[in-house]
Length: 358
Image 1: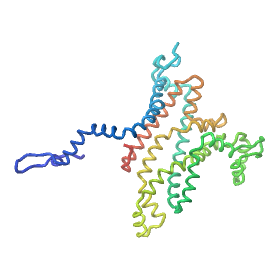
Image 2: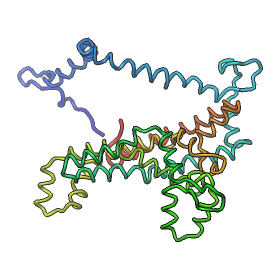
Image 3: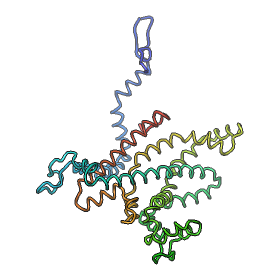
Image 4: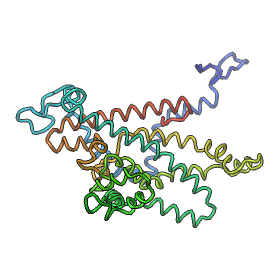
């Protein structure tokens, strides 16, 4: 462990036999003493810039922090006589959580949690590397015009409504218009029928009158494909910024050593953007269980609940049926596990790569 010594901030005067504080330490002490005064001067000087933060802070306060008071409902008894608000309900302790884990609703909750984790894990496994690969691909395009056109094309889906994305997926993977036939199927469904040698797939298509999106077997794959198409291009912006920040002299040194394109990518680019990748990975792990509610809700029905029902949709159904406290408890468990995951990922990254969020 590092220990501070007197010699680090004191200077010994042999003539007088006394110690005096070093100039560096005097500057540090003065800076520390006037820290808050300096902050005040900065606020007064740039008050217009800080004023622009007020709307953002209000949004977070009103729509992020204020609703947290409703989390108390997870510890309240919804059957309290005469109670119309959460504050009027009797304290219920951990009974709602006990009902989730061990009670009559445990099967529905654990199935929804399992689906949430599987969908999120597939998103991390396939969705996280794609923007990195895309950023490396953009970096190899020498024509600025060509690169700009391609970037606009891949960024565009991010600015489309989730309703439009899911509607396109439902149409493209549409099922037959008549039962036990392949007439009227979507474009991608028809293409899959042409290239698939399996008769089993054809039977699945014939029986999927609502389309492959609402099939238990293919829901997760279609969800990930549409997710990568929607977010992959936009998420590559951060990685592309890190890639183009790599010093040209590093490439020149690698070329002098005889490194080709793949070797430069392996020994120059990837190590240079590793810290960015780690930070983005930690943030991705933090939102691992925050699977998009709207998209799952639009792409699910009773036919594919076994694979599509997640904690958010289950909680919403419980809220609609009046079981609000149980729904809030389920969401709280989901969020607490997400917090543990991000803290764990941050600790591992800090130990392994000396990179962390704090």
